[in-house]
Image (tube, rainbow, N blue to C red; front, side, top):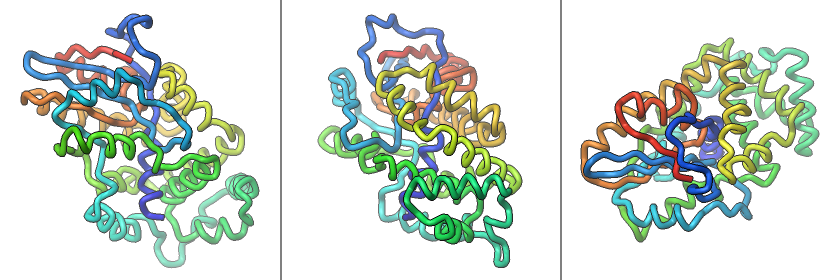
Length: 304
């Protein structure tokens, strides 16, 4: 349950858009999930935009990607959510950061419309509405959001065990044991737990409404990701997040992009070639990782 919660948290930021300048000609790029490149005089970094949950039959690895991966010395991920140490940290932190104080319940915070939307979603998943509400009542709104996101995604056949990060962990074993992370599990959980309670409730209500109105949104996003259609992804995810929850957009996308760009700048001071895997939503747009890196003086090109 707890690892699913953190994977769902990661999945909230999984999609994004491109900064359009400095892309390769479409005919030069192999069709597949979007991938970017930056380099200096002694090393190169490849950045692949990932989805953290996929269906088992999703074929996303291109020959080009596999060739690039085989050439690197080091691989970077958003956060370690697999190791025993990370799991222990998550188990300790979720009760501290994600449970309501005694006497407070999630149902007391939701509007009648929010409760009705939740009941609709429960029905779609084959769960009694009362049981669904009872299981979520102890949770703070941010944790209820990610728990629901996980449950709904898995009900549609999506699974973190088939996500890009899990596949990459297996692929890199014969290539390199130099695996690093931009963030800790505690930081990951803190991004949403740190949002004001009123913002958490508003975002949960908005998420419930969107899930009821657009039940196939995740399928549409996954299809766009498979072919590198980042303009569609940008519109569906980043534009909506900026409009519906500027606080979440700032916390989950913008702040982290600037932090990662500083870390990548340090990476580029070395001489190792690296592969960086982050949610595709972080890559594009005027505040996307690609543009932030350009502002630091790097040439950044879309290569797939």
